[in-house]
Each structure stands twice: as structure tokens, then as C-alpha cells.
Length: 182
Image (tube, rainbow, N blue to C red; front, side, top):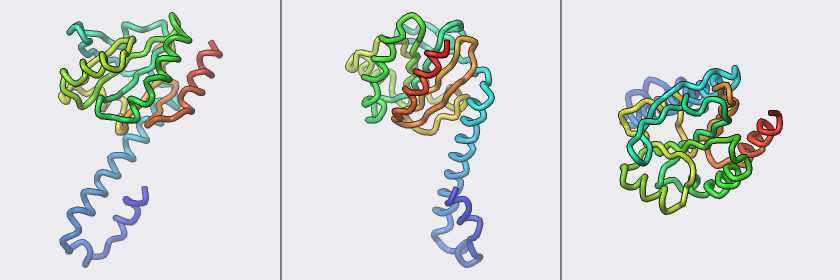
């Protein structure tokens, strides 16, 4: 927000300088991040229906989000290159075991090669559904993913209840709240 605010106050001299293209690029990136953050807030604040998508799993089968209707779902947008994603796997494993039968976790790998994705799933022994998001699909845009990990809680009716970016302990408190309410 500050980048956008200060960028709008640049003088003509600053605009004419060699630094302006860099400043403009940073401002454009900041505006995109703000727009994505606003979209995430809108998705969760109104308990909007979760956008459906279909992606390949580890065996190449096409899996749709709508296949999980009737259960609580966590979408976990992650990558093998993301230290915070990997740090959060033990907590996800605990939640997966604790809510067995009531909760599905759907891992969505982003920005990896298929080989790196499959190797990471095996290396970290991730027992839940794993899907591969290529650069050409729009699932990251549908959920306004800008940071990793991004986790999304979806209720059994298919409505978004929480979107959380980064490794955040409050995500699991929020999950506990929703799981106890049902």
C-alpha cells in the first residue's frame, strides 16, 4: 500500500529519471498484490462458493474440487522449493489424522516441474491428495495466490471460510473453530 501511495506522488523529475522504470515495476507489482489480497478477503468474507477446478493427480487422473463436496477441505498451495511450505507439513499431517473422515487435504503443487513435485511428495510422505498445477492453468488466479504456502478452508457446502497466506499458526486455530462448530 505504501509503495502505491508514494509512487503516485513522484515528481516529474523522478518520473524522467533512469530509476523510474524500476519504481514503476515495483508499483505495478504492489498494485497486483493489493488486488489479490482484496480478492482473497472477498472470497472468504462472504463465504463465496469455492471456484471449481480440475487438475491431474500423481497417477495422471483428473481430480475436481467438486469431487470432495460434503467434506471439509483444505487446499494447500505449496512448492518443493518453499521452506515455509515444508515447515508446515507436520501440522497438516496432525490435522489430517485428527479429522480423519471429516477433512480432506488437497495439496496443489505450484511452480515445480512434475518430477520435482512427485519427488517432494514421496520425500515428505504426504498422505493426502496431491494435484499438479502447471503454469498454464488458472487455479492460482482463481484463489488469488500470491504467497506460499496459501491455505484455504472450504466447508462441506463448498463455501470458502478462510484464506491464509504464509506459515501462520492462526490457520490451525481457525480450522479447529470450524471443525468444532460442525
